[in-house]
Image (cartoon, rainbow, N blue to C red; front, side, top):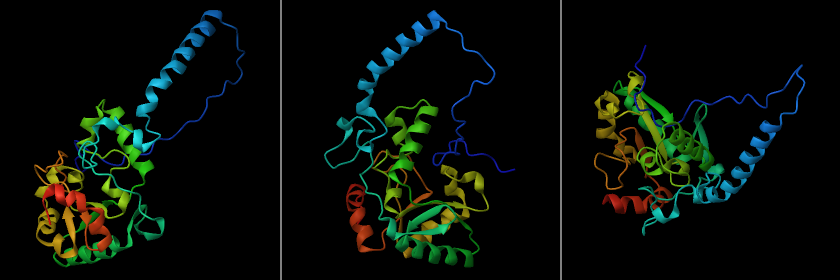
Length: 243
C-alpha cells in the first residue's frame, strides 16, 4: 500500500451530513435549569455573531482581516483572481475542469510525457471560490492554524490561481505517495516537467524560496500560453521577476 501523504494540502474528503436528529419514542420533559442554561448560551451566541462577521468565510472578501492586503493587492502572499467563465471550462477528467486552452496544452504535454515513459497524474484543476473557501477554512480549523499559517499552503478564497481555470496540480502516477508533497520533486515526472513544461507554456507557480512567501509546491503549475492567461498572471510574474 502506498504511503499516505504526511502533509496533504488540497481537496479534503467529502463529509457526509447526517441531518437533523429525530427523537423517536421519547417524551420530552421540562427541565428548568437546562432551559435556562440554553437561553443564556443562545443570548451570548447572538451577541458574539456580530464580532465574527468581519471574518466570516461566507464572503470571500471578508475571509481574513482585510488589513493584511498589501499595496500590490496580495493577501497573505496571494494575488486576487476572478472565477473563470463557466463557458470556458471543459471536463478533462471526471470531476476535474480546466480552461479549454489549458486542457489543450495539458493533453499535448501528457501525451509527450507518455512517449518518454512518464505517467502524469492530474490531481486537480479549476476550483470555484466556494470550493476554495471550504478547503481553506475547513482544513484551517481542523489543523488549528491561523490564517497566515494556512495561507502558506493554500490560498484564501478569491485568491487562488485555480479559480482562473489555468492552474493544475500534477503528480507521478507511479508514486502516488508523493502527491501534494515536496517529495514530488524527486520523481521522474517532476524531472520531466522541469525540462519540458515550458514547451507547453506551463510555469511552476511557487518554486523554492519564492518571493510570495508561499510554501514550495512542485506539483502546482499554471498555464501562460494565451494572451488572457498572460494578463491574468501579470502581477504574479512581476513579483517573481519572471518575464
